[in-house]
Image (spheres, rainbow, N blue to C red):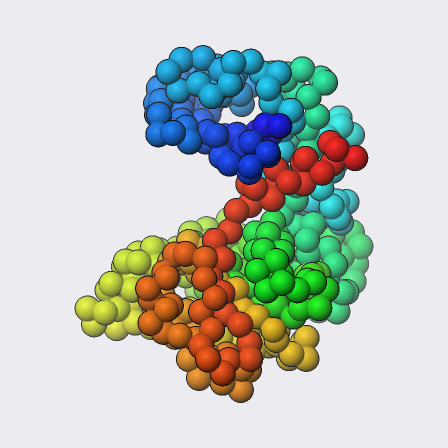
Length: 399
């Protein structure tokens, strides 16, 4: 059985076709610059590639080209659309309307659109893709939506409510939602399998670290707190995002610089984080290199990053009254051996002790990094959100 996984943006349509018999990616690619001009890049499991400039006026044309490339030409992997059993879509924001993955209906699409003001850069694009997909695929092909926020719907009210007048929660749904839920759910499930334990027995801190980063507190397989909040801006310092900040700083800067709300939003989301502190780059590899060359601001960015991760691990351990394992995942979490070394240093009181030679040798690979005598395991677990979306899709269409 083959499932097509879609991750749609406002001007892009990333995809993977996965054979669920062996969970192998048969083909993957990206339709870019939708509504501008258009380009598709496509790769198959056996190394064949296809690239072409296209005219993607809307997501519908992108889906049509995607199907054409999958079924015809030198980089085709199937002979007919009927070989695609279902389509799974990643959706960023499900709010309190969606606590689990769901079969797509017109009503579901309308509900996703109704909460677009909570994720204005993402949900409208998801809605466009869902409607375009319904136009291109036969109605007999089931579609499933998997939400980044649904994993965090198990957070207790004490964790997701803000200290604001309650009416803003009642009237505008202002609360912590959390993101990267698909990644946190995938890696925590993999960890339980690797440890040979029931996930309901485990206390886990999952660190999804990339250009966007979040840390999740997982007790018994359920998210009970996470670092991202109402939007993905909250929590850790990130590539260009500030992370958590005293709100009064914003009104102070706005008054001093005569900045509008949209300018403040741009400052926090696109000009801050590693880039804003270092003045070098938003890329962790580049600020690490600059730090090693003695750049003091790059060094500061690195120190802030690692300090904050360590602080969240400690805080979430306190919340759970214990800790069985820490997971490092995401582009930085999986590939920055020096970050893992620094974060795990001087954490003996939590039972964290890693083998630094193994940590460097196995950089980027699935590995238990724990040293002898460690009572809390530390793992690198490469994330695979697309596979989890495909698994959810398969489960729902099989029920």
